[in-house]
Length: 441
Ligand code: SAM
Ligand code: SF4
Ligand code: F3S
Image 1 (spheres, rainbow, N blue to C red):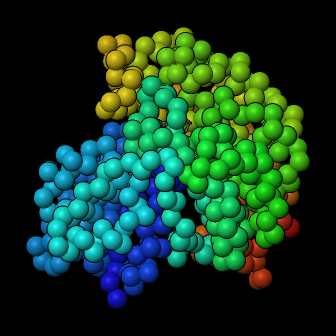
Image 2: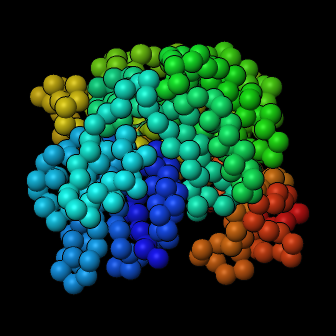
Image 3: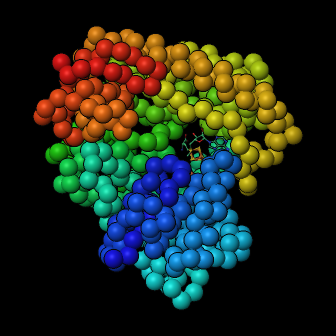
């Protein structure tokens, strides 16, 4: 049996695409290998969102390509770096057998076969009307939680972001396919479904790949909510500008909709938001938060923030700090602005924030975030929380790990009968910044 090892960098889209590749390759007899050294086919699924993840491609290839000298192994570069720099990579690494972008994932079997006779380069985008969403389900998706893509690409043009270049125009997946995949995952024991896309709120607003009108995102949430066996619904990522009243109402009406929302804000300064072309202001963002919390008071919010966007002044950075204090996010991903090839923000680089200043801002933001997170977690001490059990903790023997609907990781001593996929009530004993610890109550 041939084996495949897929190294995945980047976001949920890449995780999902890797799953789809595993699924399709399984039809040709490929089984997953534990390590790249054991695999007949090694695929690196790349991310180019910032410079650092992009660099990881080169170090990974540095460990894999030398193996070609001692054994036959097919090496492929997939994903977002392949999409934007495919031709350069193909020329730079003559020993790499395949280079292809996200739009070629559905062709993986054919490309692997073709690579046996010639090298393959496929970085073409599909037309909106013909976009083929692969339907096979990842053989590794027999866990508690599963992702379902509802959309590909992004029609926004945030000035810092390379995704529109790596993933192409936005296409909504037909809702029938989405619901079929949800049902397939439920049949495998998955109870927590995460709908994924770069801007899920705009789902269905344009024609889908099948060219037919589709439900709106709020309507899709309601359809998924009706699927028997689904217990928790999450989605990522939302754009604050598109968080309409119909989606807010879902937090009132749909009990399966998780108590957590990731709503990237990027900056607390109106001028910076304008220069990022995010098309909302701080006040609009705060209004969305207020409406969401009115609909679901227990909602835990997390966010993404970029510090050191070109031209960001000290005072503008402080506005991001005060926004964090005002909203009291339960967590965030924060990054120093990283200039990306071909993005509009490159034109602002003469106002680049010095690296030392940006790093100082990042550290201050992260320290405040940590303090707030810990304070929010401490409020839960003594409370009983419902936890969906994920399995044994990877670090602590005899300890079980699970997650609340609000996306908090909870660890507790194992108890007979508490199995993966079950809900248990846990009394929180200790709060840490990133996790909670308790005991079955
Ligand atoms: N579509 C989502 C949105 O609109 O918020 C997020 C997409 S991106 C995959 C994830 C995060 O990476 C962004 O929210 C942003 O904070 C960060 N990011 C994107 N481009 C970046 C850049 N050039 N430098 C630093 N961070 C960046
Ligand atoms: Fe990038 Fe903006 Fe699209 Fe998100 S919404 S993927 S940040 S262009
Ligand atoms: Fe990276 Fe591509 Fe996702 S650039 S963040 S893997 S869409």
